[in-house]
Amino acid sequence: MARFQSTYIWQKKKAFQAAYSGPNSLTPQAERSYTLTFDAYLGFKPWKDGEVYFVPEINQGLPLSSLTGLGGFTNGEATRVSGTNPTLYRQKLFLRQTWNQGGGQDKVDAAVDQMAGTVDRNRWVLTAGNFSTLDVFDDNAYAKDPRTQFLNWSGMSHTSYDYAADARGFGWGAALEWYQGPWVLRAGRMTGPTTPNGLPVDFRIFQHYGDQFEVEHAHELAGQPGKVRVLAWRARAQLARYDAALAYGLANPSADKQWITAVRGAEQTKYGLGLNIEQAINPESGVFMRAMKADGKTETYAFAEADASFSTGYSSSGKAWGRAQDTVGFMFAKNMLSSDRRAYLAAGGISFFIGDGALRYKPETLVELYYNFNVNKNLWVSLDYQRISNPAYNADRGPVNVGSVRLHAEF
Image 1: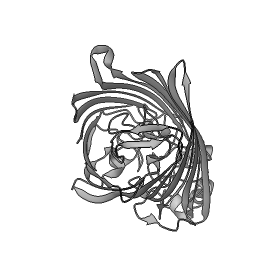
Image 2: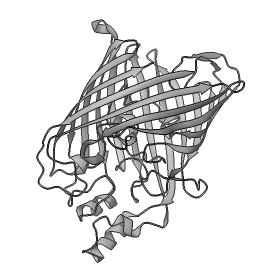
Image 3: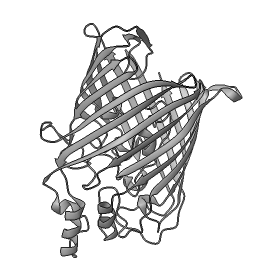
Image 4: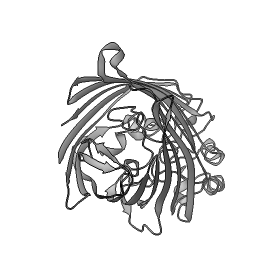
């Protein structure tokens, strides 16, 4: 198998009002940004029901405000880019092994990271190697892929799902899935970064790791398919606690405001629990909802600056107006912080992605609308609009308006 994709995303942020700005603020001036990725999805079957995939990627880009100043960032591709010079790296290298157990068969269509064929409805599936936790967990038919659906991080996954990964969103590990009738059980362990949000991988997977367990159930409601997923996760790493970082900052007022680095080092565990629902309304449209709560005691390990999150939305094809291959989507998202993280930021503390030097807390809310126009079988052009209130959870700044154009090709 050999498949290829390329995605170009151009964004423009309008100037907005800000009472003040800090070291990790979204700049209030107008900005433009872009990301560009090229991926090759190469796969082969070394033996019966076994698949090996290798995915190299070339990327470049310039994120808004150097990827600071938001809980839910406006471009899900932004973490993958490493500068304006094209960079080649290995994105994925993994094995997928299926043990079929009967119960009838389902057809599998060819896609990225997937070869065409058939699988038993009852089966075991092992994924092992270098991949993303989101390749296996927290799927959703209407809100998952920033290359074809919603651009904001809040549409990729639970914003408060601090899953273990390197700075680009990938890690090493294994996940096992058990499909039995309408039920699916998943469990997995992945490596995280050596330092929070860093690129080097910590391979001490029995000491520092991210665990996740997910239960999925498929159903029909009014004759239309839907799925409910419950996801529990925990991360174990050397992380800073916000109460300790705040105490350090108050005791050392002349110290650098990134107080979390001064108290990082002790072993910490963070965890969360989330609900994910997708429901078709008819064959052309459906709705989704995600909600998650994390403990919020420690700094972000590998994903977004959020301790609780909620998102809901609607997606439809354009069949009603004669454009069946087009897609339109609307999403509302709300991201929140724990009391410990709020106190740290309000005192002037700086964390990895956010830090305005002060904080008048309100939840960060987002409205996103996109239209994905199918030019031909290989090319799509999207227009996207995002309005973000209280960027980085600060009512003294914003709202922010961001317009985007996305070009996506698959071969």
